[in-house]
Length: 373
Ligand code: SF4
Image 1 (cartoon, rainbow, N blue to C red):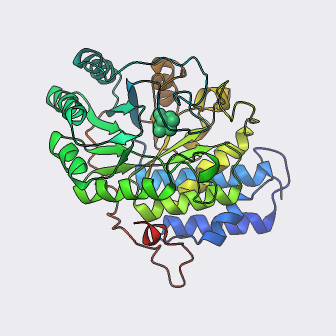
Image 2: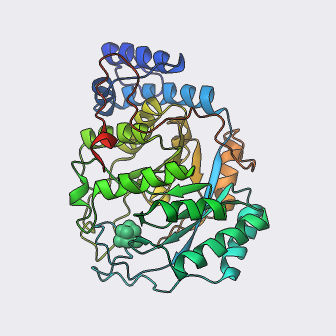
Protein backbone atom coordinates (compact mmCIF):
# COMPACT_ATOMS: atom_id res chain seq x y z
CA UNK A 1 0.00 0.00 0.00
CA UNK A 2 1.28 3.53 -0.79
CA UNK A 3 1.20 6.43 1.61
CA UNK A 4 0.25 9.64 -0.20
CA UNK A 5 2.40 11.67 2.24
CA UNK A 6 5.68 9.88 1.73
CA UNK A 7 5.24 7.78 -1.43
CA UNK A 8 6.76 4.93 0.58
CA UNK A 9 5.30 1.52 1.10
CA UNK A 10 3.19 1.25 4.24
CA UNK A 11 3.64 -2.02 6.07
CA UNK A 12 0.06 -3.31 6.19
CA UNK A 13 0.66 -5.23 9.44
CA UNK A 14 2.06 -2.10 11.11
CA UNK A 15 -0.82 -0.07 9.74
CA UNK A 16 -3.33 -2.52 11.23
CA UNK A 17 -1.51 -2.53 14.58
CA UNK A 18 -1.30 1.29 14.75
CA UNK A 19 -4.99 1.62 13.87
CA UNK A 20 -6.04 -1.03 16.41
CA UNK A 21 -4.04 0.58 19.22
CA UNK A 22 -5.04 4.09 18.20
CA UNK A 23 -8.73 3.17 18.17
CA UNK A 24 -8.38 1.45 21.54
CA UNK A 25 -6.85 4.58 23.09
CA UNK A 26 -9.50 6.78 21.47
CA UNK A 27 -12.13 4.54 23.05
CA UNK A 28 -10.60 5.10 26.48
CA UNK A 29 -8.47 1.94 26.57
CA UNK A 30 -4.77 1.55 27.26
CA UNK A 31 -1.88 -0.12 25.50
CA UNK A 32 0.50 -2.61 27.10
CA UNK A 33 4.24 -2.16 27.49
CA UNK A 34 4.84 -4.74 24.77
CA UNK A 35 2.46 -3.03 22.35
CA UNK A 36 4.07 0.33 23.12
CA UNK A 37 7.51 -1.04 22.32
CA UNK A 38 6.34 -2.12 18.89
CA UNK A 39 5.33 1.51 18.26
CA UNK A 40 8.62 2.88 19.60
CA UNK A 41 10.40 0.45 17.24
CA UNK A 42 8.66 1.64 14.05
CA UNK A 43 11.29 2.55 11.45
CA UNK A 44 9.56 3.24 8.15
CA UNK A 45 8.75 6.97 7.65
CA UNK A 46 5.36 6.04 6.18
CA UNK A 47 4.49 4.06 9.32
CA UNK A 48 5.72 6.92 11.51
CA UNK A 49 3.47 9.42 9.70
CA UNK A 50 0.60 6.98 10.11
CA UNK A 51 1.37 6.87 13.85
CA UNK A 52 1.43 10.68 13.98
CA UNK A 53 -2.01 10.92 12.41
CA UNK A 54 -3.45 8.67 15.16
CA UNK A 55 -1.57 10.57 17.89
CA UNK A 56 -3.06 13.77 16.48
CA UNK A 57 -6.56 12.28 16.72
CA UNK A 58 -5.90 11.18 20.32
CA UNK A 59 -4.69 14.68 21.23
CA UNK A 60 -7.77 16.16 19.54
CA UNK A 61 -10.12 13.87 21.46
CA UNK A 62 -8.62 14.34 24.94
CA UNK A 63 -7.08 17.82 24.74
CA UNK A 64 -9.11 19.62 22.04
CA UNK A 65 -7.22 22.31 20.15
CA UNK A 66 -5.92 24.09 23.23
CA UNK A 67 -2.16 24.35 23.68
CA UNK A 68 -0.77 25.32 27.08
CA UNK A 69 2.32 27.45 27.13
CA UNK A 70 4.83 27.46 29.96
CA UNK A 71 7.94 29.48 30.58
CA UNK A 72 10.69 29.30 33.16
CA UNK A 73 12.87 31.66 35.16
CA UNK A 74 16.31 30.51 36.21
CA UNK A 75 15.78 31.48 39.85
CA UNK A 76 19.21 30.32 41.04
CA UNK A 77 21.83 29.63 38.42
CA UNK A 78 24.90 27.42 38.19
CA UNK A 79 27.29 25.89 40.75
CA UNK A 80 24.97 22.92 41.34
CA UNK A 81 26.65 20.14 43.36
CA UNK A 82 24.89 17.42 41.33
CA UNK A 83 26.56 15.79 38.33
CA UNK A 84 23.73 15.39 35.78
CA UNK A 85 25.62 14.61 32.58
CA UNK A 86 23.40 16.77 30.34
CA UNK A 87 23.44 19.89 32.47
CA UNK A 88 25.36 23.13 31.90
CA UNK A 89 24.76 24.16 35.53
CA UNK A 90 26.60 21.34 37.25
CA UNK A 91 29.71 22.41 39.15
CA UNK A 92 31.35 19.18 37.94
CA UNK A 93 31.78 20.56 34.40
CA UNK A 94 33.36 23.66 32.84
CA UNK A 95 30.57 25.12 30.70
CA UNK A 96 30.78 28.90 31.16
CA UNK A 97 27.15 28.95 32.28
CA UNK A 98 26.14 31.94 34.50
CA UNK A 99 26.11 31.63 38.30
CA UNK A 100 24.01 33.66 40.74
CA UNK A 101 22.06 33.26 44.00
CA UNK A 102 18.31 33.11 44.51
CA UNK A 103 16.48 35.86 42.58
CA UNK A 104 14.93 39.04 43.97
CA UNK A 105 11.23 39.79 43.42
CA UNK A 106 11.73 42.13 40.41
CA UNK A 107 12.95 39.66 37.74
CA UNK A 108 10.19 37.25 38.72
CA UNK A 109 7.53 39.97 38.43
CA UNK A 110 8.93 40.94 35.02
CA UNK A 111 8.79 37.32 33.86
CA UNK A 112 5.14 37.11 35.01
CA UNK A 113 4.27 40.30 33.09
CA UNK A 114 5.93 39.04 29.94
CA UNK A 115 4.28 35.62 30.28
CA UNK A 116 0.88 37.25 30.68
CA UNK A 117 1.42 39.38 27.57
CA UNK A 118 2.22 36.20 25.61
CA UNK A 119 -0.76 34.18 26.97
CA UNK A 120 1.54 31.83 28.86
CA UNK A 121 -0.27 29.67 31.45
CA UNK A 122 2.54 29.15 33.94
CA UNK A 123 5.91 30.51 34.98
CA UNK A 124 8.21 28.07 36.73
CA UNK A 125 10.91 29.15 39.15
CA UNK A 126 13.79 26.73 38.57
CA UNK A 127 16.76 26.47 40.92
CA UNK A 128 20.11 24.79 40.30
CA UNK A 129 20.74 23.06 43.59
CA UNK A 130 20.35 19.57 44.97
CA UNK A 131 17.12 20.21 46.79
CA UNK A 132 15.26 22.22 49.37
CA UNK A 133 15.12 21.88 53.15
CA UNK A 134 13.38 23.88 55.84
CA UNK A 135 15.15 27.16 56.60
CA UNK A 136 15.58 30.75 55.35
CA UNK A 137 15.90 29.68 51.71
CA UNK A 138 12.53 27.92 51.83
CA UNK A 139 11.09 31.12 53.37
CA UNK A 140 12.48 33.10 50.44
CA UNK A 141 11.14 30.64 47.86
CA UNK A 142 7.70 30.75 49.48
CA UNK A 143 7.80 34.57 49.41
CA UNK A 144 8.49 34.58 45.63
CA UNK A 145 5.67 32.07 45.08
CA UNK A 146 3.23 34.16 47.13
CA UNK A 147 4.16 37.28 45.13
CA UNK A 148 3.61 35.44 41.84
CA UNK A 149 0.29 34.06 43.02
CA UNK A 150 -0.88 37.44 44.32
CA UNK A 151 0.01 39.03 40.96
CA UNK A 152 -2.59 36.71 39.37
CA UNK A 153 -0.88 36.80 35.99
CA UNK A 154 0.35 33.22 35.71
CA UNK A 155 0.22 29.94 37.57
CA UNK A 156 3.20 29.84 39.94
CA UNK A 157 5.13 26.62 39.31
CA UNK A 158 8.50 25.64 40.75
CA UNK A 159 11.26 23.14 40.11
CA UNK A 160 13.47 23.05 43.18
CA UNK A 161 15.07 19.64 43.20
CA UNK A 162 14.88 16.91 45.77
CA UNK A 163 12.57 17.17 48.76
CA UNK A 164 13.18 14.86 51.68
CA UNK A 165 10.57 16.17 54.08
CA UNK A 166 6.80 16.23 53.82
CA UNK A 167 6.77 19.54 55.69
CA UNK A 168 8.69 21.24 52.86
CA UNK A 169 6.18 20.03 50.29
CA UNK A 170 3.29 21.13 52.52
CA UNK A 171 4.78 24.60 52.96
CA UNK A 172 5.18 25.00 49.20
CA UNK A 173 1.54 24.04 48.75
CA UNK A 174 0.48 26.55 51.43
CA UNK A 175 2.48 29.26 49.64
CA UNK A 176 0.51 28.61 46.44
CA UNK A 177 2.56 26.15 44.38
CA UNK A 178 0.17 24.28 42.11
CA UNK A 179 2.59 22.29 40.01
CA UNK A 180 6.16 21.09 40.70
CA UNK A 181 8.64 20.19 37.97
CA UNK A 182 10.70 17.12 38.76
CA UNK A 183 11.74 14.96 35.82
CA UNK A 184 12.48 11.27 36.09
CA UNK A 185 14.91 12.07 33.22
CA UNK A 186 14.95 8.52 31.77
CA UNK A 187 14.24 4.91 32.66
CA UNK A 188 15.33 3.46 35.99
CA UNK A 189 17.87 1.36 34.05
CA UNK A 190 19.47 4.31 32.26
CA UNK A 191 19.26 6.87 35.09
CA UNK A 192 22.67 6.02 36.68
CA UNK A 193 24.27 6.93 33.35
CA UNK A 194 22.83 10.43 33.65
CA UNK A 195 23.59 11.12 37.32
CA UNK A 196 25.32 9.45 40.27
CA UNK A 197 24.96 12.09 43.00
CA UNK A 198 21.33 11.20 43.61
CA UNK A 199 19.12 8.26 42.67
CA UNK A 200 15.96 7.48 40.76
CA UNK A 201 14.37 6.58 44.09
CA UNK A 202 15.28 10.04 45.50
CA UNK A 203 13.23 11.45 42.65
CA UNK A 204 10.29 9.11 43.23
CA UNK A 205 10.34 9.91 46.94
CA UNK A 206 10.17 13.66 46.17
CA UNK A 207 7.21 13.08 43.88
CA UNK A 208 5.51 11.08 46.64
CA UNK A 209 5.81 14.03 49.09
CA UNK A 210 4.51 16.46 46.48
CA UNK A 211 1.49 14.32 45.62
CA UNK A 212 0.68 13.89 49.29
CA UNK A 213 0.76 17.69 49.66
CA UNK A 214 -1.75 17.99 46.80
CA UNK A 215 0.70 19.50 44.32
CA UNK A 216 0.37 18.56 40.64
CA UNK A 217 3.34 16.84 39.06
CA UNK A 218 5.23 18.03 36.00
CA UNK A 219 7.60 15.18 35.24
CA UNK A 220 9.16 13.92 32.05
CA UNK A 221 12.60 13.37 30.72
CA UNK A 222 15.26 13.96 28.13
CA UNK A 223 15.65 11.93 24.97
CA UNK A 224 18.86 11.65 22.97
CA UNK A 225 21.16 10.95 25.93
CA UNK A 226 22.15 7.52 24.62
CA UNK A 227 19.15 5.64 26.00
CA UNK A 228 17.43 2.89 24.03
CA UNK A 229 13.88 2.93 22.70
CA UNK A 230 13.03 0.50 25.48
CA UNK A 231 14.28 3.07 28.00
CA UNK A 232 11.98 5.66 26.43
CA UNK A 233 9.07 3.22 26.63
CA UNK A 234 9.90 2.51 30.30
CA UNK A 235 10.05 6.23 31.05
CA UNK A 236 6.59 6.76 29.52
CA UNK A 237 5.11 3.97 31.67
CA UNK A 238 6.85 5.20 34.83
CA UNK A 239 5.35 8.64 34.21
CA UNK A 240 1.96 7.02 33.85
CA UNK A 241 2.49 5.20 37.13
CA UNK A 242 3.43 8.27 39.11
CA UNK A 243 0.42 10.09 37.69
CA UNK A 244 2.38 12.94 36.10
CA UNK A 245 -0.02 15.71 35.09
CA UNK A 246 2.37 17.47 32.73
CA UNK A 247 5.00 15.46 30.85
CA UNK A 248 7.86 17.55 29.48
CA UNK A 249 9.76 15.89 26.65
CA UNK A 250 13.19 17.50 26.33
CA UNK A 251 15.50 16.69 23.46
CA UNK A 252 19.17 16.75 24.38
CA UNK A 253 20.98 19.87 23.28
CA UNK A 254 24.58 18.73 23.87
CA UNK A 255 26.39 21.38 25.92
CA UNK A 256 30.15 21.71 25.36
CA UNK A 257 31.98 20.72 28.53
CA UNK A 258 29.39 18.17 29.69
CA UNK A 259 29.84 14.39 29.35
CA UNK A 260 27.12 14.32 26.67
CA UNK A 261 28.74 17.06 24.55
CA UNK A 262 29.51 14.68 21.67
CA UNK A 263 26.16 12.87 21.59
CA UNK A 264 24.80 12.48 18.07
CA UNK A 265 21.48 14.33 17.62
CA UNK A 266 18.39 12.18 17.25
CA UNK A 267 16.80 12.17 13.78
CA UNK A 268 13.71 14.36 13.55
CA UNK A 269 11.42 11.40 12.76
CA UNK A 270 12.74 9.53 15.81
CA UNK A 271 11.86 12.55 17.97
CA UNK A 272 8.33 13.02 16.65
CA UNK A 273 7.71 9.26 16.78
CA UNK A 274 8.72 9.28 20.46
CA UNK A 275 6.29 12.13 21.17
CA UNK A 276 3.51 10.20 19.40
CA UNK A 277 4.28 7.06 21.42
CA UNK A 278 4.08 9.11 24.62
CA UNK A 279 0.63 10.32 23.49
CA UNK A 280 -0.51 6.70 23.01
CA UNK A 281 0.68 5.78 26.53
CA UNK A 282 -0.44 9.04 28.19
CA UNK A 283 -3.60 10.08 26.31
CA UNK A 284 -4.90 12.59 28.87
CA UNK A 285 -1.66 14.05 30.12
CA UNK A 286 -0.31 17.42 29.08
CA UNK A 287 2.60 16.44 26.84
CA UNK A 288 4.88 19.44 26.70
CA UNK A 289 7.78 19.83 24.33
CA UNK A 290 10.48 21.67 26.23
CA UNK A 291 14.25 22.08 25.93
CA UNK A 292 16.03 21.32 22.66
CA UNK A 293 12.98 21.89 20.45
CA UNK A 294 14.37 24.57 18.17
CA UNK A 295 17.86 23.17 17.76
CA UNK A 296 16.76 19.58 17.14
CA UNK A 297 13.56 20.04 15.11
CA UNK A 298 14.34 23.20 13.17
CA UNK A 299 11.72 23.64 10.39
CA UNK A 300 9.85 20.52 11.53
CA UNK A 301 8.77 22.04 14.87
CA UNK A 302 5.10 22.18 13.97
CA UNK A 303 5.07 18.37 13.66
CA UNK A 304 5.12 18.14 17.48
CA UNK A 305 1.40 18.92 17.52
CA UNK A 306 0.58 16.31 14.90
CA UNK A 307 2.60 13.94 17.09
CA UNK A 308 0.25 14.69 19.98
CA UNK A 309 1.95 17.44 21.97
CA UNK A 310 -0.52 19.64 23.84
CA UNK A 311 1.86 22.06 25.52
CA UNK A 312 5.04 23.87 24.69
CA UNK A 313 7.71 25.68 26.63
CA UNK A 314 8.23 29.15 25.21
CA UNK A 315 10.84 31.83 25.82
CA UNK A 316 14.42 30.98 26.59
CA UNK A 317 15.44 27.81 28.41
CA UNK A 318 17.64 27.78 31.50
CA UNK A 319 20.96 28.08 29.71
CA UNK A 320 20.11 27.98 25.99
CA UNK A 321 18.05 30.12 23.63
CA UNK A 322 14.69 29.36 22.07
CA UNK A 323 13.05 30.96 19.08
CA UNK A 324 11.08 34.19 19.78
CA UNK A 325 7.68 33.70 21.42
CA UNK A 326 6.04 35.64 18.58
CA UNK A 327 7.20 32.97 16.15
CA UNK A 328 5.73 30.22 18.36
CA UNK A 329 2.41 32.07 18.63
CA UNK A 330 2.33 32.49 14.84
CA UNK A 331 2.99 28.75 14.42
CA UNK A 332 0.00 27.94 16.65
CA UNK A 333 -2.23 30.40 14.79
CA UNK A 334 -1.19 28.90 11.44
CA UNK A 335 -2.13 25.43 12.70
CA UNK A 336 -5.53 26.54 14.07
CA UNK A 337 -4.41 25.81 17.64
CA UNK A 338 -5.49 27.94 20.57
CA UNK A 339 -2.94 29.17 23.10
CA UNK A 340 -5.53 31.03 25.20
CA UNK A 341 -4.45 31.55 28.76
CA UNK A 342 -6.40 29.78 31.44
CA UNK A 343 -5.46 28.76 34.94
CA UNK A 344 -5.59 25.09 33.88
CA UNK A 345 -7.14 23.14 36.72
CA UNK A 346 -6.19 19.78 35.15
CA UNK A 347 -9.88 18.88 35.23
CA UNK A 348 -9.44 17.06 31.90
CA UNK A 349 -7.24 14.47 33.59
CA UNK A 350 -8.19 11.51 35.67
CA UNK A 351 -6.70 11.47 39.15
CA UNK A 352 -4.10 8.73 39.32
CA UNK A 353 -3.32 7.54 42.85
CA UNK A 354 0.17 6.39 43.72
CA UNK A 355 1.05 2.74 43.12
CA UNK A 356 -1.49 2.25 40.36
CA UNK A 357 -0.89 0.00 37.41
CA UNK A 358 -2.50 0.42 34.02
CA UNK A 359 -5.68 -1.26 35.22
CA UNK A 360 -5.67 -3.94 32.55
CA UNK A 361 -5.79 -7.60 33.36
CA UNK A 362 -2.25 -9.03 33.32
CA UNK A 363 -0.88 -5.51 33.41
CA UNK A 364 2.74 -5.53 32.36
CA UNK A 365 3.47 -2.18 33.89
CA UNK A 366 6.26 -2.43 36.40
CA UNK A 367 5.32 -0.91 39.71
CA UNK A 368 8.14 1.57 40.08
CA UNK A 369 6.72 3.30 43.09
CA UNK A 370 6.08 0.09 44.93
CA UNK A 371 9.84 -0.32 45.27
CA UNK A 372 10.53 3.32 46.13
CA UNK A 373 10.86 4.31 49.76
S1 SF4 B 1 19.87 19.07 36.26
FE1 SF4 B 1 19.39 20.19 38.16
S2 SF4 B 1 20.21 18.87 39.78
FE2 SF4 B 1 21.19 18.20 37.86
S3 SF4 B 1 23.11 19.37 37.76
FE3 SF4 B 1 21.57 20.54 36.61
S4 SF4 B 1 20.73 22.00 38.09
FE4 SF4 B 1 21.80 20.40 39.25
